[in-house]
Image 1: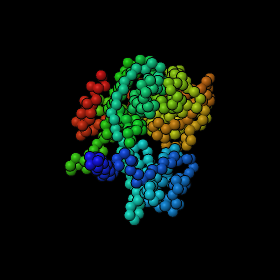
Image 2: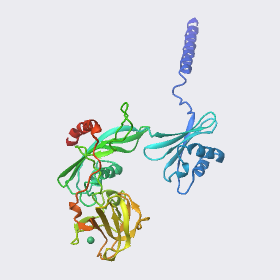
Image 3: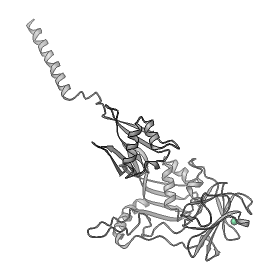
Length: 403
Ligand SMILES: [Zn+2]
């Protein structure tokens, strides 16, 4: 009997100790209630910020306060449909505590409640970066080669854009071409978001090897020096020459001929030198064609055998012509300024054309020249002051590119 009492006493004490320990560690197996909740809203076409905020249950007055406080840093009237607005609510009171809007893939606007007001900040999206590398050989298309390795189409396009001044990705990619890419992938909260920068790449096209190394530009904050940008951020070859040139290699860009993101299926695009020393690109109707360089439109509209065509004057030396369009791009008219890579028209068969194709010419001092033989001036090279820094980058990636 006495024994039993002792037994139960010990038992009760043990249970009490256990409860005490558990209470001290705050019941670790029960999730603490999060103090905030995040509501994400995809912006629909034609809606305003206040519309989205109200849909999220925020009072119009508060939504207007958010709009007003944000305006010093970013005008929320410019929000773009398809992007996301995230609102942070207090879980207990249900009051909005702040909001986040991704302005682009690099920057975001944060608005947070302070004791008396709202505080707006622009900041870099804090991605977690993982460095990756991939290599491959092309059998059918660059998209197919990248896809078979499970790679993001955005990386494929970034690779084509890196060498858009060296290689005609629309027409010149061949079976047996190969590539090696060292790049960054971006993660947020442990989840893959998108590819980041290509750090270094090599592309072998028809036996010719091209290499590019990313240089982030001059920090120029070395003690005592004025913050002048000496070298522009961008891609340079191993000798420090810019990959960017005054003219793109082709008026047809990979991103427009890849039929959206349909895997491995490319429109059949071939090019041939026409007797009149232009290049004819066979391409599907409505394929966008871009200006190969910055310039001013000096002819836009019907022009005899060229049909609907555009002539862009680039500088005192060079002009380029694009013919047989189905239609012109919006805003393309005589006197309009165009940027390199800007769409000027859509492939058609107007004028003297038997089928849909783009007729492309380069003029030097008003005379036709062979576009394949034009020596295109490169952009500014890496500045002397940045050479040592750049060479370190080349050295660190060069060996990995050949492996
Ligand atoms: Zn032609």
